Length: 403
Image (cartoon, rainbow, N blue to C red; front, side, top):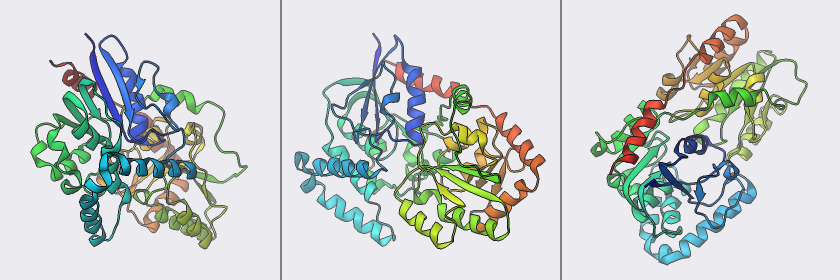
């Protein structure tokens, strides 16, 4: 009898965890597994990439990104329906007030973190009892699997620095204590998660992102990429336009480069709720032709291939798939000096690690632009880094196969 497995994820929008899931699912196609997928919000532009043998449980699905205007409207509708379902608004009112006040005292109200519990409560439920259920990302999917999925084994994935992203046990209502095993995607992610859930020590193990390097290299050769006729150096960043990604620092670094007379243009692939604020900052600094927000792209890999530098200056990460993609395509890479980035990029060996300040980022960029030989060497070394996840797959398979 094949094992009946359920994967749950919050959305299928174009982002790291979603991409990682779509790369992982084909490894469970075959006679040993019967795989279902439930997308909590029922939306995301990557839905057409679900493998044919995976059954999508959502009866209705929107292909709109949660980051687009139409997608946000759809998300608001989903949240309103969840609030009305099963008396959720009354039952969760104390939870919303308590945690909202706690967030305000810390100086940051994170509406998305509050709503994950509501969305999990109001989502459709299924009578199937699974051999295993996997919450592939923190937040809503983790709450949903913990509270509303019948499964003999419950597994969770952690993709971010848990406390840095704003999660804690009060918000979670200790949901991870119900899980049989948790897979953080990096050693640093595991460390930060265990600071929040020390009781999970002994039932966590790192599961590295599944990255298909062969497919990335093939897609990089397809038509696409930069469409302007710019003849200077091109910098690329691929990331969602969120506070986590610290784009104001990148914009200010670009201003320093321009003032220094460096002939360079910075391109960003991605969307997010910070777009308007970033566009305003770009205008204020007179960088409309120097720092370009190109939006999300179905195939970003020709851009990597054509870029002179890849810069990933973020405030915190779990483990960046974008960095792994840049490494696969031999990009000279500059990353911000945070632990997770240091685990992916070795300073002066296959990239540069810079402080998260405009000057430090600008100085690192000028160093590589002024030394093309060093940039080439770092890029070549980056391309030699292997993506290894076979042992992680074996560990996951062992958990899924046990009786």
